[in-house]
Image: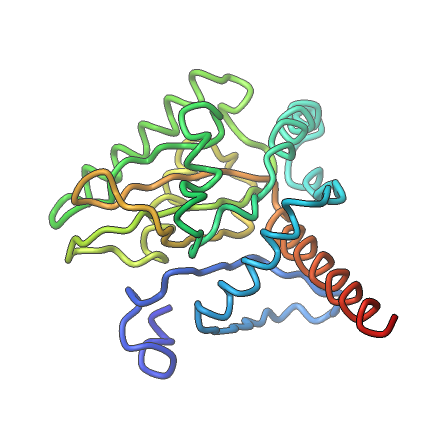
Length: 252
């Protein structure tokens, strides 16, 4: 995000929501491209509020996230990868996991199940000044202990995506979101992620939930690759159907 500093924002610590994922086209060209969209957070609040309200009264279509992983690993690992996938695909991104939640329904869904769902990691506090090394070691230990506690996930054999929440804090030293994600992804690769696979995408954002202390808290959840795109499609379809219902009522 450093390249956007100046043209889009003054300081990358202003960015309270960032989402990135690998997008694959059918273009035969081997060249890669980067597409960036910047929006005011208040605009996203409006979209999320509508979608959240719709989600309270309807059952979303349960689409499976599909991704090509067999070519990444030996065939002998396919069965293990399938078992991992069947578990990870259960946990979908919730409309309640985002910035701007109204106070009366706080905390986020991830916050409610942190400590209950083993696939939601309590990373603890963001590091203060001169605490980066200890922070890196703590993340490494969290993932290493998870792999030992749940041997099925000692190594994950297919691409994954992550959802990272950071609570609000008045602390002056605040690591920007993209650097925090980079640190966490590095330790994921060093511990529970199979060497031939990759992290396909991430969401990282500041939630309107006060930290328990002076330092911001971090929570992390992992999904199969494709869940971020699937979530955005579910939201887009719900909003499209909602708009059609309003139009039908107007013209009845």
